[in-house]
Image (cartoon, rainbow, N blue to C red; front, side, top):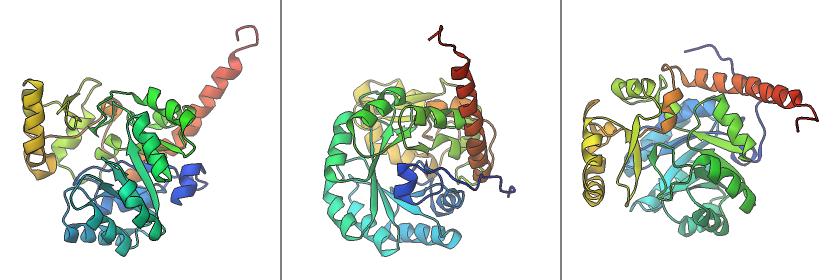
Length: 328
């Protein structure tokens, strides 16, 4: 385990204030990937570790939360896709086990808000367009995670990029916006803040971390990726951005309706954590994989982001100061 180099002062924003974290950095939830131990390490580094409940039975979710609580006493969250049939059961388990933040996604959070508020918890909700963002705010969520189309995993059908989505939502919402999609290093973090976000969510970069419980071929695929290494499957039902390989390129070559049907019926069975190899597994991954380097510890990822964000910010300041009044 690396020596800690994380800046102890932390960053205070509306998001870190709401979540009770030192930094407004959130682990992007990934099905059967962001489990208890990984989430705990993100929390120990000052971010918000998120346990993905999708694909977990009640007992498995309890076990993952228990593992996380054994490794950290820092804030944690549980991601609950609203459309899942066991969503309300997962919520009760999270409440029962002392989780303080619920991260809803893939549906309208309105029918869960009352119970979340009764339990005194914080709730953030993932959106990919203006309509769902306004609906989430109206339902009473504390913040939204705004996901651009370049993100990995399930993305919005509207194809709105992070650069366009974040400033628009910042303008029309009164609650804070957390930027997701296309963020893997300090440059992305600083850019997100420049767009008006009060926090960031990072997924693909953490896949290539030492602690991430995915097969080595998945990590290698992320590390060797370029900006054209991903593609979309299931474009009309639940579009999902994944790494290109033999099976995903085969599916993407079908007629759109056939691809949608394949992903809807067998997407879970083909998912990387269910088996397969570098040619046959479906591996969620964002376009930002092109800037991801070697696999390192989560603590090292945090240290790089925290330290280099200050450097990037100073460089921007120097550029702006170098512009004299005649050039403006």
